[in-house]
Length: 457
Ligand code: PLP
Image 1: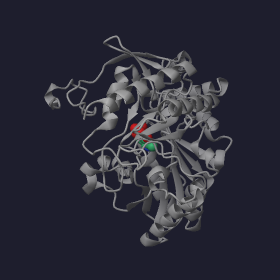
Image 2: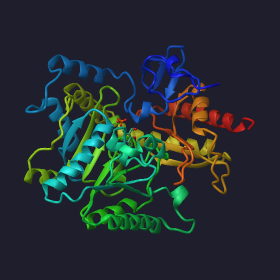
Image 3: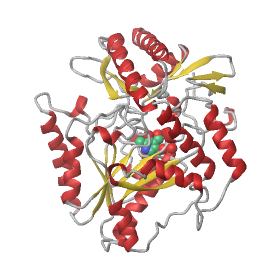
Image 4: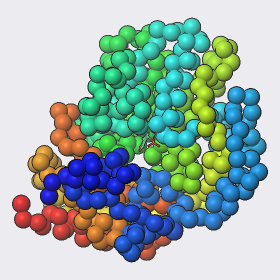
């Protein structure tokens, strides 16, 4: 079947991925962990959209909180005003200064949060009199969002290639922490973590130790290579390198944060905290467009002693209805013990995946944390040989699993020089998914995997 031509697509569908001739599905309703399609199908949302629907769909408490807020105060500009609801959300997130993070600014998307973090890094160094620090180091196989700044940091080749000539110049990438593919067979976790920290240090020295502003990294990589959980000690080792050269550590927790890994912040697993952190997705649960940049005292102080304000204004930043959604989601997190539920259901998901698919000859790795798990597929389990580059395996699996009534998140792209394959699928269901729904999800995945890998070549 040939790909459908642009003019044959429904008017709003140009943004969707090329489904090789398939039209997009039309979703008309959603409740709890399920999506309901126009054709009558019920689909288990095994990836919460894109790791978004943290408390499931159609939650009346959040809907009412947003409606009440719209009735009271639907909008204000932020040039001289804030609102009680935004301040209450800010206090909930950083009032107790988790990891030293003391301030929050609110935006609408993960890309805007990361773009703002890039600008904040830059402004901080200008304010403290070190304007020569303008280089940012990120990692290969990473994803940081959609805007030009975010694509510049993104180490996912399929997201960069069309835009290469217009990307930011002072950016370079180092290796991710990808133990399945890049840790030596006889290399201890400690030695591997140190090797990566040494690589970061060498890159800082190559660029010039007084020129690097930040190391920008997903605490737990998701979209690009599928749940890259760092080996123990990795974050402590790279934090030490950052501190040695006064480089800011920025953690992108847009996807892995807000309870997804079974702790509110993914960095809580690592024993380090960032200078700047970005969050989005699960913070708003999908009820409004809301993201945030969380900032520690070191950075706030730099601004305080300089111009006194972050030069970053957007018409819809700090929107009261979005803040109301975020605040209610966080109240539900607390009152319904959602993060602990994610930890428990994550353990169930992981052990079922291992039980049902661990010995499948094409399942190379099952990795993740909490309700953020992925499967990497291979041609040969022993040698870890990758699948042929012309087989879009994650797309085929996505379709086969969808036909069995569940939605997962498929890897993008295939085969690049730095070893990125995209041969993975990712699960990130609502954090309050039930045990029975976890089982249903694994059954659909198992059926899809068995079907796709038993097809004749
Ligand atoms: N950073 C990470 C790690 C993400 O996974 C994403 C989205 O998937 C983004 C940033 C961009 O967020 P948004 O799509 O809300 O702009």
